[in-house]
Length: 323
Image (cartoon, rainbow, N blue to C red; front, side, top):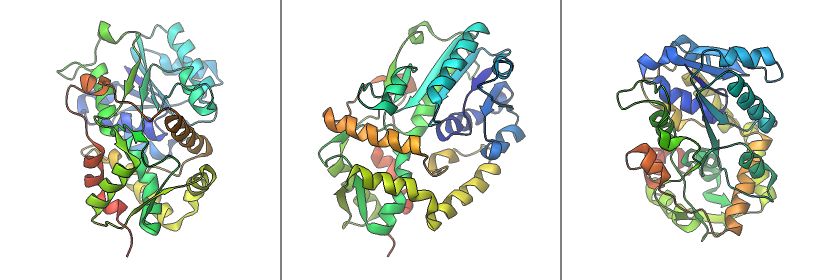
């Protein structure tokens, strides 16, 4: 049995969705949630759903019963550190063979609180994820600008969400698609930083957007931290964004896991912790000469990883300015 945590959060939902595309694997998945509204399709298609109460020891013990591997997905919950520590402690008591911790933007920073939280609990770190830019599409459509708090010569090295999910799958499954009894020795105790195949500066990012949307008048707008925070915090109140979320919720509810639809989902408006994490990440790479490429992702994926250019080509219509 494989336990995947926080499937009601964007990253956990995406990893679970990716694994659900293996029909023979569905009855071997136990998925934890706190809000079930986006989880009904998992249960309907054969996965076991468990409501998680992290303050209840019995709830933790029940979730771990018969589990071989735990995919501990670190989301944007306000008490995520304490939640993860409790899961790890219970996993050890329950004899779980392996814990794969997956988090988003796990920069090792001692000065930014939201990033420091990640450094206390994780083993597998994902850099900026291409699909984060879905949250920027609303602004680009309206204002024909790309607002970022980093300078246009600062580099990102983003990984695609599909590649991240595929890596988790490769670690858990054999080449024949069977759940591993134990993880390969080479993975035990390792910390992997997962980046995309190519570094991209803000200026290059803008050009990719212009080329894929066909709108060459897009401009790069280095904005203040407080202004980007305001945009992201208020995004849920925008009628166009709200309509998109509602449309996607209907798609999620009816998902039969035939297509990898999770890649195109904005999922929900970002919460305060999520916004703070994004802003801290930008501050961190601005102060440290940008994000650096590592070879870990392609080695673990066993295939070339998607570029940011490919992501924008796949979702070009989402980013086209309204005329």
